[in-house]
Image 1 (cartoon, helix red, strand yellow):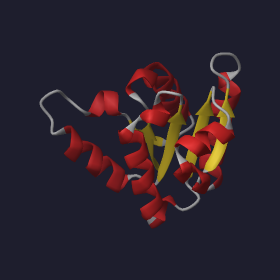
Image 2 (cartoon, one colour; image 1 turned 90 degrees about the horizontal axis):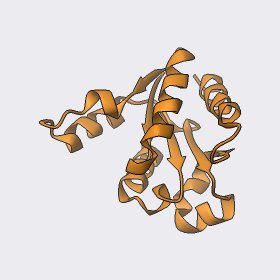
Image 3 (tube, one colour; image 1 turned 135 degrees about the vertical axis):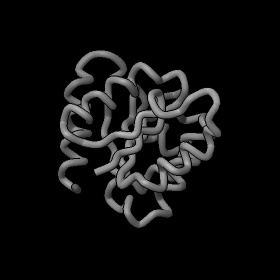
Image 4 (cartoon, rainbow, N blue to C red; image 1 turned 45 degrees about the horizontal axis):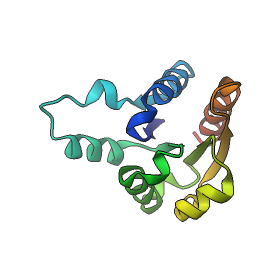
Length: 135
């Protein structure tokens, strides 16, 4: 299964951890850091990756709740039939109520809560298991 991980720019270290864990679990993950180069038309490259993806993991942090790009990626996933039951919102250091107020469209996704620092491995394992369950 091809997985697209979307996140705010400032959440890159967390995104790298999630990408590595998903790859170690045998999932094919599109990794923006390794696949978009300065000379690329980044919108085109990301658009192609979204078209090819079969699942999406959304890392929702306080910064991501204000990200137009993250909201746009979620909207895309909600319009694509292959993402049905394969859109996972990971709430990092935010509660469900605040997340749904700031970004109401996430109510259509599966939600996993992740602490800001400790015990993140447990939440990353939940992401992996949720994706494998719908593969």
